Image (cartoon, rainbow, N blue to C red; front, side, top):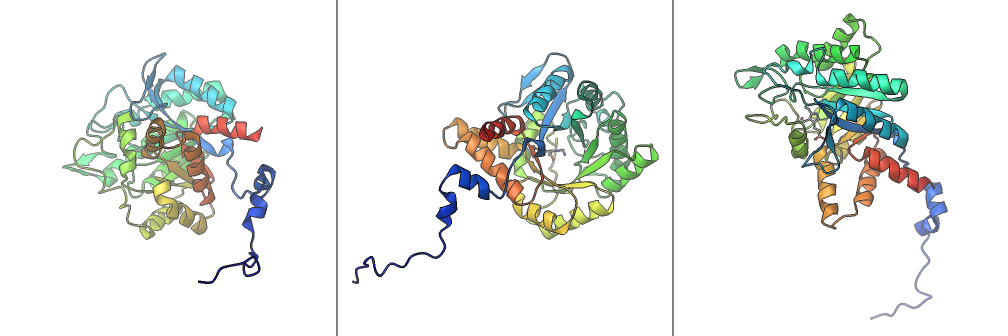
Length: 336
Ligand code: PBG
């Protein structure tokens, strides 16, 4: 056996450690920086007043009545988060999901109130889907036991128009109906609402990571699953086809969802388009970090910020995350 001596060990030519030595050097060469203005906070709004009801499957998240939602928006703005994505829990549900598209629906009411208290300081994004509003929990109207794509389109267009009239800045269709972006765009334009933007949930997989959301929004399908309309997680090229189709139909921004399980699609979306790319760190991604942190298995802040940094590094400029408020606080601390 040969013994290595000082003279036989060659000096490495690449010394990455030189630029990792101090916080100042690391800050100087950091390639990805998170900023509170990239964050979007998903919020759940429910009927009533003075209600802040914790969501069991999503510790730290609440179903908020409209007045509490306004206070939450103020906290977010204070922390530097300037965008929210709204989901609604209606008083009652029916087969057509009318709560999604009536003028005095819960989210329409919430949008008006947020606009009143926050003016244009806050970017208000409203999710457009029927699943929180249908008695059967599917994302569109049924014909027999399947979701009728074309019969759902006018209802999604109507929901989007009513949310735009309430002065949402952006509508975000998440139903995964074919042609939904075109239907919404033409409905908005015909309704004299050309300024309302569309954020298309373009690449949305039928993901196991939506579980906690369905408890939060009481939107689990009463029978079957969503695999006949949401994408197969195995398909990446198809995701790109969905993204290009949505852009063709008039989407202003596109979203990939979930985020960490679909980082390749975030990168592909960034490379294939020139529009803003959003990624949604969904309820299951959030809940998994929360649960592991509660057991002491993960550091909550470290795991959250590392995940968000990875999503941004991969190409998303807009991060939809239940950590938004907390992360903005952490980022502010790190700034000092
Ligand atoms: C509505 C919708 C869902 C989510 C966002 N919009 C639920 C679903 O598709 O079942 C999930 C978001 C999350 O898990 O955080 N279609």
